[in-house]
Image (cartoon, rainbow, N blue to C red):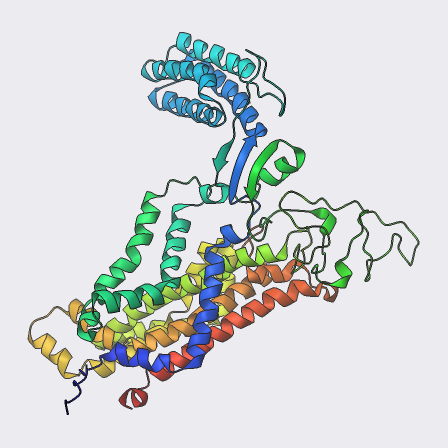
Length: 556
Protein backbone atom coordinates (compact mmCIF):
# COMPACT_ATOMS: atom_id res chain seq x y z
CA UNK A 1 0.00 0.00 0.00
CA UNK A 2 1.17 3.49 -0.80
CA UNK A 3 1.24 5.86 2.08
CA UNK A 4 -0.95 8.96 1.87
CA UNK A 5 1.08 12.10 1.43
CA UNK A 6 1.69 13.86 4.66
CA UNK A 7 -0.16 17.10 5.11
CA UNK A 8 2.04 20.06 5.94
CA UNK A 9 1.25 21.55 9.31
CA UNK A 10 1.95 25.26 9.70
CA UNK A 11 2.40 27.06 12.96
CA UNK A 12 -0.08 29.79 13.74
CA UNK A 13 0.97 33.26 14.75
CA UNK A 14 -0.91 35.53 17.17
CA UNK A 15 -3.40 36.91 14.65
CA UNK A 16 -4.02 33.51 13.03
CA UNK A 17 -5.19 32.22 16.41
CA UNK A 18 -7.35 35.30 17.05
CA UNK A 19 -9.01 35.09 13.63
CA UNK A 20 -9.65 31.38 14.02
CA UNK A 21 -11.37 32.07 17.35
CA UNK A 22 -13.50 34.83 15.80
CA UNK A 23 -14.62 32.56 12.94
CA UNK A 24 -16.08 30.12 15.47
CA UNK A 25 -18.48 32.71 16.87
CA UNK A 26 -21.83 33.28 15.11
CA UNK A 27 -22.21 36.64 16.85
CA UNK A 28 -19.16 37.93 14.97
CA UNK A 29 -20.55 36.94 11.58
CA UNK A 30 -23.97 38.43 12.31
CA UNK A 31 -22.53 41.64 13.76
CA UNK A 32 -20.08 42.17 10.92
CA UNK A 33 -22.76 41.51 8.30
CA UNK A 34 -25.17 44.04 9.81
CA UNK A 35 -22.47 46.68 10.34
CA UNK A 36 -21.04 46.22 6.84
CA UNK A 37 -24.53 46.73 5.38
CA UNK A 38 -25.06 49.86 7.51
CA UNK A 39 -21.73 51.34 6.46
CA UNK A 40 -22.39 50.44 2.83
CA UNK A 41 -25.74 52.29 2.99
CA UNK A 42 -24.00 55.31 4.51
CA UNK A 43 -21.15 55.36 1.99
CA UNK A 44 -23.40 54.82 -1.04
CA UNK A 45 -26.11 57.20 0.24
CA UNK A 46 -25.86 59.51 -2.83
CA UNK A 47 -26.59 56.55 -5.10
CA UNK A 48 -29.35 55.10 -2.90
CA UNK A 49 -31.29 58.27 -2.00
CA UNK A 50 -31.17 61.34 -4.20
CA UNK A 51 -33.40 63.67 -6.16
CA UNK A 52 -30.80 63.72 -8.96
CA UNK A 53 -30.94 61.02 -11.66
CA UNK A 54 -28.33 58.31 -11.85
CA UNK A 55 -28.55 58.48 -15.65
CA UNK A 56 -30.04 61.13 -17.92
CA UNK A 57 -30.29 61.38 -21.68
CA UNK A 58 -32.27 64.22 -23.19
CA UNK A 59 -32.47 68.00 -23.59
CA UNK A 60 -32.23 70.58 -20.82
CA UNK A 61 -33.79 73.80 -22.09
CA UNK A 62 -33.36 75.61 -18.77
CA UNK A 63 -29.63 74.79 -18.63
CA UNK A 64 -29.06 76.15 -22.14
CA UNK A 65 -31.02 79.34 -21.45
CA UNK A 66 -29.20 79.88 -18.17
CA UNK A 67 -25.82 79.56 -19.89
CA UNK A 68 -26.95 82.06 -22.55
CA UNK A 69 -28.07 84.56 -19.94
CA UNK A 70 -24.99 84.18 -17.74
CA UNK A 71 -22.66 84.50 -20.74
CA UNK A 72 -23.92 88.02 -21.35
CA UNK A 73 -23.69 88.94 -17.65
CA UNK A 74 -20.14 87.56 -17.34
CA UNK A 75 -18.78 89.29 -20.44
CA UNK A 76 -20.25 92.64 -19.32
CA UNK A 77 -18.67 92.21 -15.89
CA UNK A 78 -15.30 91.60 -17.56
CA UNK A 79 -15.77 94.73 -19.72
CA UNK A 80 -16.52 96.89 -16.68
CA UNK A 81 -13.44 95.65 -14.83
CA UNK A 82 -11.14 96.17 -17.82
CA UNK A 83 -12.56 99.62 -18.60
CA UNK A 84 -12.13 100.68 -14.98
CA UNK A 85 -8.51 99.54 -15.12
CA UNK A 86 -8.88 97.09 -12.20
CA UNK A 87 -8.41 93.89 -14.19
CA UNK A 88 -5.02 92.46 -13.44
CA UNK A 89 -3.80 89.05 -14.67
CA UNK A 90 -5.63 87.16 -11.91
CA UNK A 91 -8.94 88.98 -12.50
CA UNK A 92 -8.68 88.50 -16.27
CA UNK A 93 -8.00 84.78 -15.85
CA UNK A 94 -10.96 84.43 -13.48
CA UNK A 95 -13.37 86.19 -15.83
CA UNK A 96 -12.05 84.28 -18.83
CA UNK A 97 -12.58 81.01 -16.99
CA UNK A 98 -16.18 81.99 -16.16
CA UNK A 99 -16.88 82.78 -19.84
CA UNK A 100 -15.25 79.52 -20.96
CA UNK A 101 -17.43 77.52 -18.56
CA UNK A 102 -20.63 79.02 -20.06
CA UNK A 103 -19.39 78.33 -23.58
CA UNK A 104 -18.68 74.69 -22.66
CA UNK A 105 -22.23 74.32 -21.33
CA UNK A 106 -23.68 75.75 -24.54
CA UNK A 107 -21.63 73.35 -26.68
CA UNK A 108 -23.08 70.37 -24.79
CA UNK A 109 -26.43 70.49 -26.59
CA UNK A 110 -25.46 72.05 -29.94
CA UNK A 111 -24.77 70.35 -33.24
CA UNK A 112 -21.32 70.92 -34.76
CA UNK A 113 -22.62 73.31 -37.43
CA UNK A 114 -24.29 75.51 -34.79
CA UNK A 115 -21.09 76.02 -32.79
CA UNK A 116 -19.39 78.41 -35.25
CA UNK A 117 -20.20 81.48 -33.24
CA UNK A 118 -18.88 79.80 -30.08
CA UNK A 119 -15.59 79.22 -31.91
CA UNK A 120 -15.44 82.97 -32.47
CA UNK A 121 -16.05 83.52 -28.75
CA UNK A 122 -13.14 81.20 -27.93
CA UNK A 123 -10.87 83.09 -30.32
CA UNK A 124 -11.67 86.48 -28.78
CA UNK A 125 -11.33 84.94 -25.31
CA UNK A 126 -7.74 83.90 -26.09
CA UNK A 127 -6.97 87.48 -27.15
CA UNK A 128 -8.51 88.76 -23.91
CA UNK A 129 -6.36 86.46 -21.81
CA UNK A 130 -3.23 87.65 -23.63
CA UNK A 131 -3.97 91.39 -23.53
CA UNK A 132 -7.07 92.50 -21.59
CA UNK A 133 -7.97 95.62 -23.62
CA UNK A 134 -11.38 97.35 -23.59
CA UNK A 135 -11.75 96.89 -27.35
CA UNK A 136 -11.34 93.10 -27.05
CA UNK A 137 -13.79 92.99 -24.13
CA UNK A 138 -16.39 94.94 -26.18
CA UNK A 139 -16.03 92.43 -29.03
CA UNK A 140 -16.68 89.67 -26.52
CA UNK A 141 -19.82 91.42 -25.27
CA UNK A 142 -21.08 91.84 -28.86
CA UNK A 143 -20.53 88.13 -29.51
CA UNK A 144 -22.42 87.27 -26.31
CA UNK A 145 -25.37 89.36 -27.53
CA UNK A 146 -25.31 87.52 -30.86
CA UNK A 147 -25.20 84.19 -29.04
CA UNK A 148 -28.32 85.19 -27.13
CA UNK A 149 -30.20 85.81 -30.38
CA UNK A 150 -28.83 83.14 -32.71
CA UNK A 151 -28.59 80.23 -30.25
CA UNK A 152 -32.03 80.62 -28.73
CA UNK A 153 -33.40 77.04 -28.33
CA UNK A 154 -36.31 76.13 -30.57
CA UNK A 155 -39.42 74.73 -28.92
CA UNK A 156 -39.52 70.91 -28.93
CA UNK A 157 -41.18 69.58 -32.07
CA UNK A 158 -40.86 72.84 -34.01
CA UNK A 159 -38.25 73.52 -36.71
CA UNK A 160 -35.59 76.13 -35.84
CA UNK A 161 -35.62 79.54 -37.56
CA UNK A 162 -32.29 80.28 -39.34
CA UNK A 163 -30.36 82.94 -37.46
CA UNK A 164 -32.93 83.11 -34.66
CA UNK A 165 -33.04 79.68 -33.02
CA UNK A 166 -31.36 76.28 -33.06
CA UNK A 167 -32.49 72.72 -32.44
CA UNK A 168 -30.83 71.29 -29.36
CA UNK A 169 -29.40 67.79 -29.48
CA UNK A 170 -29.63 65.20 -26.71
CA UNK A 171 -26.74 64.76 -24.31
CA UNK A 172 -25.93 62.10 -21.75
CA UNK A 173 -25.14 62.87 -18.12
CA UNK A 174 -24.69 61.07 -14.81
CA UNK A 175 -25.80 63.80 -12.37
CA UNK A 176 -25.30 61.81 -9.15
CA UNK A 177 -21.79 60.66 -10.05
CA UNK A 178 -20.78 64.08 -11.38
CA UNK A 179 -21.66 65.58 -8.00
CA UNK A 180 -19.42 63.29 -5.95
CA UNK A 181 -16.23 64.50 -4.30
CA UNK A 182 -12.84 62.77 -4.31
CA UNK A 183 -13.37 61.63 -0.73
CA UNK A 184 -16.71 60.03 -1.56
CA UNK A 185 -15.19 58.21 -4.54
CA UNK A 186 -12.33 57.02 -2.33
CA UNK A 187 -14.65 55.50 0.26
CA UNK A 188 -17.03 54.05 -2.33
CA UNK A 189 -14.15 52.29 -4.06
CA UNK A 190 -12.65 51.17 -0.76
CA UNK A 191 -15.94 49.72 0.42
CA UNK A 192 -16.44 47.92 -2.91
CA UNK A 193 -13.09 46.23 -2.24
CA UNK A 194 -14.24 45.41 1.31
CA UNK A 195 -17.50 43.88 0.12
CA UNK A 196 -15.70 41.70 -2.43
CA UNK A 197 -12.86 40.80 -0.05
CA UNK A 198 -13.96 37.17 0.57
CA UNK A 199 -13.88 36.55 -3.20
CA UNK A 200 -10.63 38.21 -4.25
CA UNK A 201 -8.77 37.17 -1.08
CA UNK A 202 -9.59 33.51 -1.74
CA UNK A 203 -8.56 33.84 -5.39
CA UNK A 204 -5.24 35.44 -4.45
CA UNK A 205 -4.51 32.87 -1.73
CA UNK A 206 -5.30 29.88 -3.93
CA UNK A 207 -4.26 30.97 -7.41
CA UNK A 208 -1.24 33.18 -6.75
CA UNK A 209 0.02 31.98 -3.37
CA UNK A 210 -0.92 28.30 -3.97
CA UNK A 211 -2.45 27.99 -0.51
CA UNK A 212 0.97 28.18 1.16
CA UNK A 213 0.35 29.56 4.65
CA UNK A 214 3.90 30.87 4.97
CA UNK A 215 3.63 32.77 1.67
CA UNK A 216 0.16 34.03 2.62
CA UNK A 217 1.55 35.36 5.90
CA UNK A 218 4.45 37.11 4.17
CA UNK A 219 2.06 38.64 1.61
CA UNK A 220 -0.04 40.48 4.21
CA UNK A 221 1.61 43.84 3.63
CA UNK A 222 1.38 43.52 -0.14
CA UNK A 223 -2.32 42.62 0.09
CA UNK A 224 -2.92 45.60 2.37
CA UNK A 225 -1.36 47.90 -0.23
CA UNK A 226 -3.38 46.23 -2.99
CA UNK A 227 -6.44 46.70 -0.78
CA UNK A 228 -5.94 50.48 -0.55
CA UNK A 229 -4.40 51.18 -3.97
CA UNK A 230 -7.63 51.13 -6.08
CA UNK A 231 -9.37 53.52 -3.68
CA UNK A 232 -6.41 55.92 -3.59
CA UNK A 233 -6.06 55.82 -7.36
CA UNK A 234 -9.79 56.42 -7.91
CA UNK A 235 -9.80 59.36 -5.49
CA UNK A 236 -6.77 61.00 -7.10
CA UNK A 237 -8.02 60.59 -10.68
CA UNK A 238 -11.61 61.66 -10.02
CA UNK A 239 -12.64 64.84 -11.80
CA UNK A 240 -16.18 65.30 -10.49
CA UNK A 241 -17.46 68.68 -9.34
CA UNK A 242 -18.95 68.50 -5.88
CA UNK A 243 -21.97 70.72 -5.32
CA UNK A 244 -24.87 71.01 -2.93
CA UNK A 245 -27.19 68.00 -2.82
CA UNK A 246 -29.98 70.04 -1.31
CA UNK A 247 -31.57 71.48 -4.48
CA UNK A 248 -31.74 69.61 -7.75
CA UNK A 249 -33.48 71.02 -10.85
CA UNK A 250 -34.15 67.69 -12.54
CA UNK A 251 -37.43 66.55 -11.01
CA UNK A 252 -39.04 70.00 -11.14
CA UNK A 253 -37.72 70.58 -14.66
CA UNK A 254 -39.00 67.23 -15.89
CA UNK A 255 -42.40 67.95 -14.36
CA UNK A 256 -42.62 71.45 -15.90
CA UNK A 257 -41.27 70.41 -19.29
CA UNK A 258 -38.08 72.50 -19.11
CA UNK A 259 -36.12 69.25 -19.19
CA UNK A 260 -37.12 66.70 -21.83
CA UNK A 261 -35.77 63.22 -21.14
CA UNK A 262 -35.42 60.40 -23.63
CA UNK A 263 -34.38 58.17 -20.77
CA UNK A 264 -33.90 58.89 -17.09
CA UNK A 265 -33.05 56.57 -14.20
CA UNK A 266 -33.55 57.75 -10.62
CA UNK A 267 -32.07 56.17 -7.46
CA UNK A 268 -34.11 53.55 -5.56
CA UNK A 269 -35.18 56.30 -3.11
CA UNK A 270 -35.96 59.25 -5.43
CA UNK A 271 -35.95 61.92 -2.72
CA UNK A 272 -33.24 64.31 -1.56
CA UNK A 273 -32.17 64.81 2.05
CA UNK A 274 -33.70 68.29 2.14
CA UNK A 275 -36.43 67.99 -0.50
CA UNK A 276 -39.53 69.62 0.97
CA UNK A 277 -43.14 68.74 0.17
CA UNK A 278 -45.41 70.68 2.54
CA UNK A 279 -48.53 68.81 1.36
CA UNK A 280 -47.15 65.64 3.01
CA UNK A 281 -46.15 67.10 6.36
CA UNK A 282 -45.96 64.41 9.09
CA UNK A 283 -47.41 61.82 6.75
CA UNK A 284 -47.41 58.31 8.27
CA UNK A 285 -45.59 55.48 6.47
CA UNK A 286 -47.41 54.92 3.19
CA UNK A 287 -47.99 51.23 3.93
CA UNK A 288 -50.10 52.37 6.91
CA UNK A 289 -53.87 52.85 6.50
CA UNK A 290 -53.76 56.35 8.03
CA UNK A 291 -51.51 57.63 5.22
CA UNK A 292 -54.10 57.35 2.43
CA UNK A 293 -54.68 60.77 0.79
CA UNK A 294 -57.41 61.68 -1.70
CA UNK A 295 -56.83 63.51 -4.97
CA UNK A 296 -57.89 66.74 -3.28
CA UNK A 297 -55.27 66.27 -0.53
CA UNK A 298 -57.47 65.11 2.38
CA UNK A 299 -56.69 62.11 4.60
CA UNK A 300 -59.25 59.28 4.56
CA UNK A 301 -58.41 57.57 7.86
CA UNK A 302 -57.02 58.39 11.28
CA UNK A 303 -57.13 61.54 13.42
CA UNK A 304 -56.47 63.81 10.41
CA UNK A 305 -59.34 62.39 8.32
CA UNK A 306 -62.21 64.48 7.01
CA UNK A 307 -62.59 67.82 5.28
CA UNK A 308 -63.57 69.78 8.40
CA UNK A 309 -62.48 69.90 12.04
CA UNK A 310 -64.87 67.73 14.11
CA UNK A 311 -64.76 70.03 17.15
CA UNK A 312 -65.24 73.41 15.47
CA UNK A 313 -66.60 72.53 12.04
CA UNK A 314 -63.98 74.79 10.39
CA UNK A 315 -63.04 73.49 6.91
CA UNK A 316 -59.53 72.07 6.65
CA UNK A 317 -57.07 73.48 4.16
CA UNK A 318 -55.70 70.99 1.65
CA UNK A 319 -54.17 70.84 -1.81
CA UNK A 320 -53.26 67.88 -4.04
CA UNK A 321 -49.93 66.16 -3.49
CA UNK A 322 -47.51 66.95 -6.31
CA UNK A 323 -46.03 63.74 -7.72
CA UNK A 324 -42.89 64.63 -9.64
CA UNK A 325 -41.10 62.61 -12.29
CA UNK A 326 -39.43 59.52 -10.85
CA UNK A 327 -41.55 59.40 -7.68
CA UNK A 328 -44.03 56.63 -6.80
CA UNK A 329 -47.76 57.42 -6.88
CA UNK A 330 -49.41 59.32 -4.03
CA UNK A 331 -50.65 56.23 -2.18
CA UNK A 332 -48.02 53.76 -3.35
CA UNK A 333 -46.63 51.72 -0.45
CA UNK A 334 -43.08 52.57 -1.56
CA UNK A 335 -43.54 56.35 -1.72
CA UNK A 336 -42.64 57.06 1.93
CA UNK A 337 -42.23 53.63 3.62
CA UNK A 338 -40.90 55.28 6.81
CA UNK A 339 -43.13 58.37 6.67
CA UNK A 340 -42.19 62.04 6.46
CA UNK A 341 -41.14 64.76 8.91
CA UNK A 342 -42.59 68.18 9.70
CA UNK A 343 -41.57 69.59 6.29
CA UNK A 344 -42.65 66.59 4.25
CA UNK A 345 -39.09 65.31 3.81
CA UNK A 346 -38.78 61.58 3.24
CA UNK A 347 -37.64 59.85 6.44
CA UNK A 348 -36.03 56.90 4.65
CA UNK A 349 -33.81 59.20 2.59
CA UNK A 350 -32.87 61.20 5.66
CA UNK A 351 -32.13 58.05 7.67
CA UNK A 352 -29.81 56.75 4.93
CA UNK A 353 -27.97 60.07 4.82
CA UNK A 354 -28.07 60.35 8.62
CA UNK A 355 -26.13 57.10 8.86
CA UNK A 356 -23.18 58.94 7.35
CA UNK A 357 -22.98 61.36 10.26
CA UNK A 358 -23.74 58.95 13.11
CA UNK A 359 -21.44 56.16 11.93
CA UNK A 360 -18.66 58.55 10.90
CA UNK A 361 -18.70 60.31 14.30
CA UNK A 362 -18.44 56.99 16.12
CA UNK A 363 -15.62 55.69 13.93
CA UNK A 364 -13.49 58.84 13.60
CA UNK A 365 -13.78 59.82 17.26
CA UNK A 366 -12.71 56.29 18.20
CA UNK A 367 -9.67 56.48 15.93
CA UNK A 368 -8.73 59.78 17.56
CA UNK A 369 -9.17 58.60 21.16
CA UNK A 370 -7.36 55.34 20.40
CA UNK A 371 -4.44 57.28 18.91
CA UNK A 372 -4.17 59.71 21.84
CA UNK A 373 -4.72 57.00 24.47
CA UNK A 374 -2.24 54.59 22.88
CA UNK A 375 0.55 57.17 22.63
CA UNK A 376 0.16 58.50 26.17
CA UNK A 377 -0.43 55.07 27.69
CA UNK A 378 2.61 53.56 25.97
CA UNK A 379 4.87 56.40 27.10
CA UNK A 380 3.63 56.13 30.69
CA UNK A 381 3.92 52.35 30.82
CA UNK A 382 7.28 52.04 29.06
CA UNK A 383 9.24 54.82 30.75
CA UNK A 384 7.52 54.84 34.14
CA UNK A 385 8.87 57.20 36.81
CA UNK A 386 7.95 60.88 36.71
CA UNK A 387 6.46 60.69 33.22
CA UNK A 388 4.15 57.90 34.34
CA UNK A 389 3.20 59.94 37.41
CA UNK A 390 2.32 63.05 35.36
CA UNK A 391 0.30 61.16 32.74
CA UNK A 392 -1.53 59.15 35.42
CA UNK A 393 -2.52 62.35 37.23
CA UNK A 394 -3.79 63.83 33.94
CA UNK A 395 -5.88 60.71 33.38
CA UNK A 396 -7.35 61.00 36.88
CA UNK A 397 -8.21 64.68 36.35
CA UNK A 398 -10.07 63.88 33.12
CA UNK A 399 -11.91 61.03 34.80
CA UNK A 400 -13.17 63.33 37.58
CA UNK A 401 -15.67 64.94 35.20
CA UNK A 402 -18.70 63.26 33.60
CA UNK A 403 -17.61 62.84 29.99
CA UNK A 404 -20.98 63.53 28.36
CA UNK A 405 -21.55 66.82 30.19
CA UNK A 406 -17.97 67.89 29.54
CA UNK A 407 -18.42 67.24 25.81
CA UNK A 408 -21.80 69.00 25.91
CA UNK A 409 -20.25 72.14 27.46
CA UNK A 410 -17.36 72.20 24.99
CA UNK A 411 -19.61 71.74 21.94
CA UNK A 412 -21.96 74.45 23.25
CA UNK A 413 -19.03 76.91 23.40
CA UNK A 414 -17.16 76.06 20.17
CA UNK A 415 -20.29 75.45 18.12
CA UNK A 416 -22.06 72.32 16.88
CA UNK A 417 -20.50 70.74 13.80
CA UNK A 418 -19.48 67.24 12.82
CA UNK A 419 -15.77 68.06 13.17
CA UNK A 420 -16.18 69.68 16.59
CA UNK A 421 -18.19 66.72 17.87
CA UNK A 422 -15.58 64.24 16.63
CA UNK A 423 -12.78 66.22 18.25
CA UNK A 424 -14.65 66.67 21.53
CA UNK A 425 -15.47 62.97 21.86
CA UNK A 426 -11.97 61.87 20.87
CA UNK A 427 -10.13 64.33 23.11
CA UNK A 428 -12.17 63.63 26.26
CA UNK A 429 -12.64 59.85 26.08
CA UNK A 430 -9.06 58.62 25.59
CA UNK A 431 -8.41 57.91 29.26
CA UNK A 432 -9.77 54.36 29.23
CA UNK A 433 -7.52 53.33 26.33
CA UNK A 434 -4.53 55.04 27.96
CA UNK A 435 -4.98 53.09 31.20
CA UNK A 436 -5.28 49.78 29.33
CA UNK A 437 -2.18 50.44 27.23
CA UNK A 438 -0.22 51.61 30.29
CA UNK A 439 -1.05 48.39 32.11
CA UNK A 440 -0.03 46.24 29.13
CA UNK A 441 3.29 48.08 28.75
CA UNK A 442 4.07 47.68 32.45
CA UNK A 443 3.47 43.96 32.03
CA UNK A 444 5.50 43.64 28.82
CA UNK A 445 8.48 45.93 29.46
CA UNK A 446 10.18 43.29 31.59
CA UNK A 447 9.79 40.52 29.01
CA UNK A 448 12.89 38.98 27.42
CA UNK A 449 12.25 40.38 23.94
CA UNK A 450 12.09 43.94 25.31
CA UNK A 451 15.26 43.45 27.37
CA UNK A 452 17.01 42.00 24.30
CA UNK A 453 15.89 44.93 22.18
CA UNK A 454 17.34 47.38 24.67
CA UNK A 455 20.58 45.41 24.94
CA UNK A 456 21.01 45.55 21.16
CA UNK A 457 20.78 49.33 21.27
CA UNK A 458 17.45 49.63 19.46
CA UNK A 459 15.91 53.06 19.84
CA UNK A 460 13.12 53.37 22.38
CA UNK A 461 10.62 54.62 19.80
CA UNK A 462 11.21 51.55 17.62
CA UNK A 463 11.03 49.24 20.63
CA UNK A 464 7.73 50.77 21.73
CA UNK A 465 5.91 50.81 18.42
CA UNK A 466 7.59 47.90 16.62
CA UNK A 467 7.92 45.32 19.38
CA UNK A 468 5.90 46.16 22.51
CA UNK A 469 2.75 47.75 21.07
CA UNK A 470 1.81 44.89 18.67
CA UNK A 471 1.88 42.50 21.63
CA UNK A 472 -0.29 44.81 23.76
CA UNK A 473 -2.76 45.79 21.05
CA UNK A 474 -5.49 43.35 22.07
CA UNK A 475 -7.08 45.45 24.83
CA UNK A 476 -6.97 48.51 22.55
CA UNK A 477 -9.02 46.70 19.90
CA UNK A 478 -11.59 45.66 22.46
CA UNK A 479 -11.84 49.16 23.94
CA UNK A 480 -12.05 50.72 20.46
CA UNK A 481 -14.94 48.47 19.47
CA UNK A 482 -16.94 49.51 22.52
CA UNK A 483 -15.92 53.15 22.00
CA UNK A 484 -17.51 53.28 18.55
CA UNK A 485 -20.85 52.34 20.08
CA UNK A 486 -20.37 54.92 22.84
CA UNK A 487 -19.46 57.60 20.29
CA UNK A 488 -22.67 56.95 18.35
CA UNK A 489 -24.71 57.22 21.54
CA UNK A 490 -22.99 60.46 22.56
CA UNK A 491 -23.57 62.04 19.14
CA UNK A 492 -27.21 60.94 19.24
CA UNK A 493 -27.61 62.46 22.71
CA UNK A 494 -26.00 65.75 21.64
CA UNK A 495 -28.20 65.95 18.53
CA UNK A 496 -31.29 65.11 20.57
CA UNK A 497 -30.49 68.03 22.89
CA UNK A 498 -29.95 70.37 19.94
CA UNK A 499 -26.14 70.57 20.16
CA UNK A 500 -25.37 68.09 17.40
CA UNK A 501 -25.35 68.30 13.62
CA UNK A 502 -27.37 71.24 12.36
CA UNK A 503 -30.19 71.02 9.81
CA UNK A 504 -30.69 70.31 6.98
CA UNK A 505 -27.89 67.73 7.39
CA UNK A 506 -29.46 64.82 9.27
CA UNK A 507 -28.14 62.39 11.85
CA UNK A 508 -30.02 59.62 13.63
CA UNK A 509 -30.04 61.60 16.85
CA UNK A 510 -31.23 64.79 15.15
CA UNK A 511 -34.08 62.92 13.46
CA UNK A 512 -35.48 61.94 16.85
CA UNK A 513 -36.31 65.55 17.73
CA UNK A 514 -38.36 66.21 14.59
CA UNK A 515 -41.38 65.52 16.78
CA UNK A 516 -41.93 64.37 20.35
CA UNK A 517 -45.61 63.65 19.89
CA UNK A 518 -46.80 60.06 20.24
CA UNK A 519 -49.06 60.70 17.24
CA UNK A 520 -45.94 60.85 15.06
CA UNK A 521 -44.60 57.52 16.29
CA UNK A 522 -42.51 56.79 13.19
CA UNK A 523 -40.26 59.78 13.93
CA UNK A 524 -38.99 58.19 17.15
CA UNK A 525 -39.17 54.50 16.28
CA UNK A 526 -37.09 54.11 13.13
CA UNK A 527 -34.01 56.21 14.02
CA UNK A 528 -34.15 54.87 17.59
CA UNK A 529 -34.23 51.26 16.41
CA UNK A 530 -31.24 51.84 14.12
CA UNK A 531 -29.24 53.41 16.95
CA UNK A 532 -30.13 50.45 19.19
CA UNK A 533 -29.18 47.85 16.55
CA UNK A 534 -25.86 49.53 15.75
CA UNK A 535 -24.84 49.88 19.39
CA UNK A 536 -25.98 46.32 20.14
CA UNK A 537 -23.95 44.73 17.37
CA UNK A 538 -20.87 46.82 18.15
CA UNK A 539 -21.08 45.63 21.74
CA UNK A 540 -21.52 42.00 20.61
CA UNK A 541 -18.51 42.39 18.35
CA UNK A 542 -16.48 43.88 21.18
CA UNK A 543 -17.35 41.01 23.52
CA UNK A 544 -16.40 38.48 20.82
CA UNK A 545 -13.04 40.17 20.23
CA UNK A 546 -12.41 40.26 23.98
CA UNK A 547 -13.14 36.53 24.26
CA UNK A 548 -10.95 35.73 21.23
CA UNK A 549 -8.04 37.57 22.83
CA UNK A 550 -8.42 35.60 26.08
CA UNK A 551 -5.13 33.71 26.66
CA UNK A 552 -7.01 30.66 27.92
CA UNK A 553 -8.84 30.34 24.60
CA UNK A 554 -5.66 30.87 22.58
CA UNK A 555 -3.97 28.09 24.45
CA UNK A 556 -6.83 25.69 23.76
